[in-house]
Length: 435
Image (cartoon, rainbow, N blue to C red; front, side, top):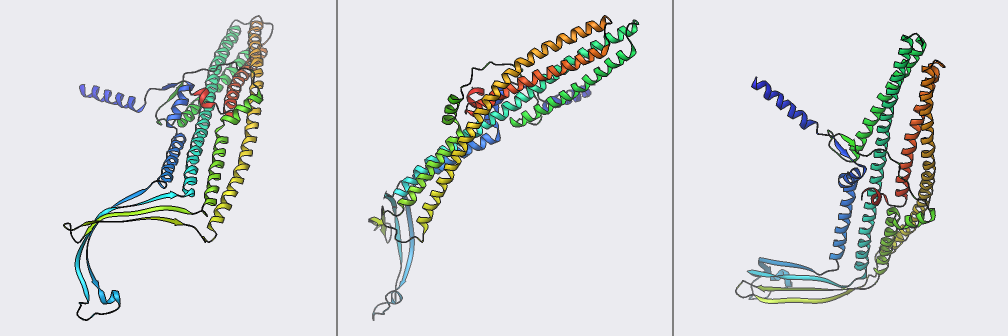
């Protein structure tokens, strides 16, 4: 008996471990979770870190480079081969003899404008990566918000379907009672039963849609495959102030990360062009070497070499000209991209502003339509109970109620999605939904 209980407890513990408790998330929780563990956001963060290391590498080229050296060698020299003559009375070779040396050497740029321009270009590259990271974060927030709103819509569909099933069940019971009492007819009961089965079918479809939508939300959040998600927020209507398109456009031009990325890329290309042009200018650098040198450690003495150098490129095989032409072409491309991004921003802001205004009116109309449909169902049921009409009128009222309910859910979804699209069009997704 004890063994059986142990096995049952072990199986129950394993089932709990395999099926963790549902994770109940608000919209803000989902957004913050996505910004922490969505793979695209993590990769964007790594790109910023890599760009910062590229900046460090470019900066290191401006700083002195110092190497420590130590060597010990044994040398035997052929004098006849080295000089080309043989002296009578002297041996043909010298050595073998030992040779020890330990010290340091350095190389330091003094004036090299190309290195400075490339360093500034690398700093602009960090800004480009950060703007790209912001773009990824904004897009990730939009995806999560859209999926969460879609899940809210699916959950609202389930609740509405449950309500319609309850209503259809009540109407079916009413028709059956009327038939039982000899007031109603069999066709009315059958018609009400058909409507009840239709509503149950709609409920099954709505539940499946909700389940698949929550699966998609979990994938966006990069959760464990066994982790189930539940929504903590319900569909709501949030009044937004009137939208000034011109002000929204001004804000979008200042905050949209896609535009910032292109502008930073233009800045980097300008530095690359300057670096290519400055490559024809003289370079000045210093080198040096200091060491303790001798045949052995007992007779070493300091030796050193210090020099200042200047170099001017005379012929590079067309490399400098090609680098300048490449940078100019890249700048022209980026100018076109900038104009394309600005046009897209204008379209996004104007479209989302119009959709918000339209969706707001849709919500008002849908609410009124739902209230009227409910009144029609109540009056039809009363007329049916009184024997004034048959169940056809009741079924038609049920269909109208279902359509009005769907219209309200869809209108609320479109309004909230339009608000999200407007926030994305002005680059405020993370500021609005994550903080």
